Amino acid sequence: MDKQKLLELYNIDIDELINYASNITKENFGNQIEACSIISARTGKCGEDCKYCSQSAHNHAGIECHPLVDLDTVKKAAESARANGAVRFSLVTSGRRPSDEDFVRILEMVKVVNSVEGLTCCASLGILTEEQMKQLAQTGCVRYHHNINTCRNYHPQICTTHTYEDRINTIKLARKYGLEVCCGVIIGMGETRENRVEMALELADINPESVPVNVLTPIEGTPFENYFDKITEDEIVRTMCIFRIAVPQAQIRFAGGRSTRLSHENQERCLKAGVNGVIVGNYLTTAGVDVKEDKATFAKLGKVMV
Image 1 (cartoon, helix red, strand yellow):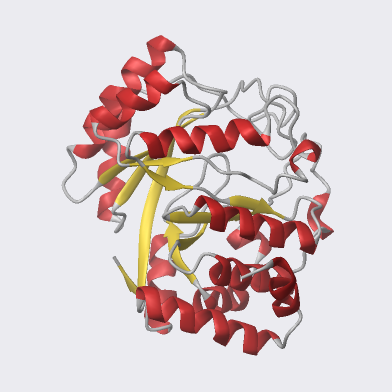
Image 2 (spheres, rainbow, N blue to C red):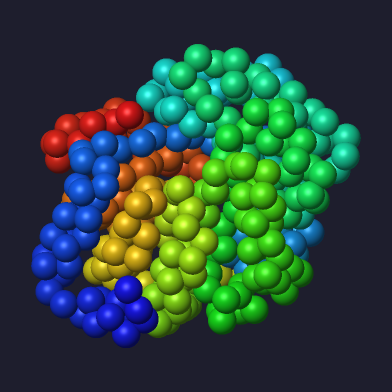
């Protein structure tokens, strides 16, 4: 699928576009929805200057920061996630990469997560060194999460302390050591529709197993605190369809912003179109959707959470 074709599809009747995407989803995934959960294992005081992020030390969001959590906290959170139906659990830390001391403890966390029956461990730890990525894989982490966040052309408008290539190289390292890749984006940061098509095509080149799609939640104290009008609900639904068409065999996963930026009706339209993964529980510094509400919605739409 090329850029011009995806731009053309953006403009067709929205019900027709939803049906188009829905057929692709059914062909590749049937009616299954995969649930995962995350823990903010280290929060805040990040030296990167990502303009959307409440955890950046360059911003002034006033969030509650904490150092690396203990193993017992991880174990309880992982068990709770499994009880809520999650089959994957991700360790997420703020910062460019963990210190050597923190990384040793994170490897122990991987073992703790894998000790919970029915749960596999994922991690989102920033721009790791090659040795760190190798150790992470050897310890039993299955999937590495590292978003491109936006397209190559728009990246300089989002962050200046690391490059788009830094992100791509990290993803390549994960692949090199046999890790699956979870790689997504944040939409609604002032990018154009053409930028979103570029995101879709770049994700297709990466070919990740999972594509979490966040919709920007403007947070007070960040440069994007007033970005409520940068994307409409109709455009969000259309974008989910375009991503499904561009990466037909990847799980398109609802992530941050779905409950604050989308009505329940439009969340259902996204699920009909091609969203076949969700994060259950809360996100990093924002609240998520109650798992009972999610399960009721899935049942209504004939979806099965796995």
